[in-house]
Length: 248
Length: 152
Image (cartoon, rainbow over all chains, first blue to last red; front, side, top):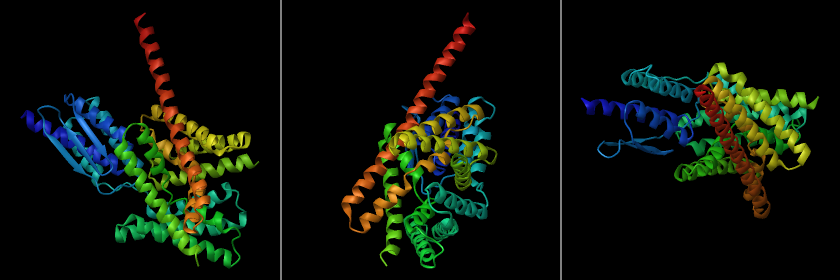
């Protein structure tokens, strides 16, 4: 009986950890949440090792140890908030461990993203606004808006199709570059560089770079270095995609 | 006038990124305000000191401070409010220029852009960490004061 209960508690912690990593939470927060949930179930002295590609969680001296692999990572802030709420309710004993596990499974299978059309518009609008903030001329705004929107559309579509993130970013960046080049050629845009920079802003791995340095400072070297590598590859894919167009 | 325009634009950008990153619907405005304050501090600091790295530190510090206060207020993870604000400060232009120069075989120029981009992202991370440590110290102090007054 005791073992069954412990098993459920580990499953619950691991599921919460997996959901948080998949949604882009910081490493230390994931470890913190898992430890808190374990303590609320009377499991003292648990150990966890969290990386962007997998979680190891151990009950300590006489408990079992489990491993959870993580494949996809996106940024979904709402899921982080929901998992956080469940762990909060678990620690204040508002939820039992069974209810919490059910709740987490519901969160795992739910699709809470904004409608794609809205995301597309948001990316387009953000690119247009960036152009002004980067001291571009008003004439370039439509070009940047279209380039940014199309870049986001292409990266999402190709990622759905091929599941290779860097390839999708490469193609999207070259589309942004091509559109900006076309705009300048057709005389509806003036400054090629600023249009491209604004257009690729929705693709830039800003969150990854920042989280990487942050994890490094917190002492999570494995996560920090691997997130840094991911950010570097993304930046390289974007740069190469743009350069492909510029070299013509 | 330009300050008002910059404020509005950065507010819109922060909300747009909050939508792309799927922040909880009721917190979009808050995320937008955090992004706006971060950008205005960054932009003002750049004007005063002329150094974009120090300005990035200041901007990230303010973003993290605001995000931390909001996260205590709404009992939600801090990352929800800080991420859309940080995106505004990310050195996208520098990284782009670095990559472009590498591909064009101009490695020396690329290195200087890349180091600046690296320094800027380091400054942003430092700003985030500093603000977090400061808030933790303040909250610990407040909590101790509270328990002390209860004991009397």
